[in-house]
Length: 505
Image 1: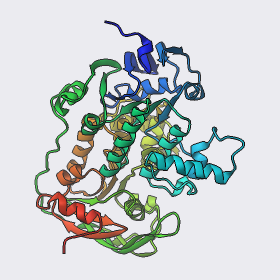
Image 2: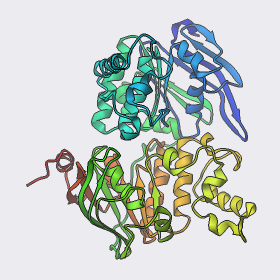
Image 3: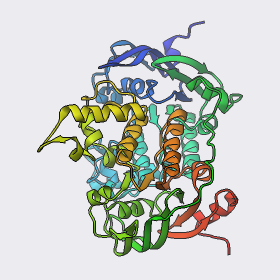
Image 4: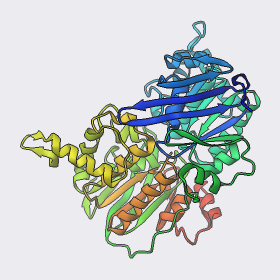
């Protein structure tokens, strides 16, 4: 029997949204009951983000209706959606790096009668209430990705959103932080708020959520009114049409080749000028994947930036195939065979306002010239080759890259970095926020690079991924290497202790 829209906090009915060359939503439907956590599932490009952007007032639908708390809504802007009680926590952060945590949270919604100190106090109270630790006085540019995620959530809670949309909220969180977030979401649901939870981590979906809706190619293909008895294989099958939950197959053992990356006594400071990396010595050889294990914020970001030339070390030496590159620029390191996939794909890796073609050739534009000028036909041909080889789903190649889904952004970024056949690949969180097939594709490319003689330094917060792919594991804690471990012989308890700064004696 049909349920009246008044019985739902959200009803997106027959939503249609088209972009040039792409049908993002094709009559999709979503019903969310008040006081529940509702998972919205689907592979990359299925229409999930587009659908919630319609709810959040970012996009206006080409067809269909938006109902919020029994009222039909026509949102012309995000401000309209916020006024109706809809808050959105985006996968790619919408924060102003130069402003403090408190300033970002209250931006556009600060009471005129409150002074700065009072606002910071209220923000601190809000963060304490929901267990989302955040220093109100710190500038956002100094925060890790996980800390920025908390600020985004607090920003929506400050506006007292009755419907909270969360797009991959745990993608940058550690397992412990994700578990804490699950408790926070449950407390919010018990208050009567409704949460729309987009995630590719199916174990978290089953643990956190009450109900689920599955999209595929812009259409609603399945709904689950109770996730208590649903297993991961069933959810994965509904999402991608297969019965796999994305198990990773360990690559075949290979004999390591010569060292392609060497760090000798590397130390570095973070953005606040505090010591973040301490006296690190390590090597990555050809034909191997070395995994960096650690809780977010223990120096992994700074280490990757030192290796790639984005941060100058305060001491030590970086060598590539025996050549000292400590003083070399990022472009010079790329020319010598170093490729980099940063964790912040839109903030660091790609330029969102530039086209797909421009982003594809920005690293190798010198080879796309005729004389002194870029040859448009060569650039397009190069981009099209990357798109086909790495399975990037795009509309028009000259459209801004910001219109692509997270998985397609990551595929293009990785393809661009591998185009010049590097010697060493530094990959930070390369499968973050991707669906089952996207994760498998990215991991497959990493294994392929290892097989072809490339050394891979894999920095990831997904311990399962590291245990399955890495030949060696290095655990980082407070900027130091706590020890080296064999992934196939080391118990998780040993790794967990090392990640907490307690290596075995």
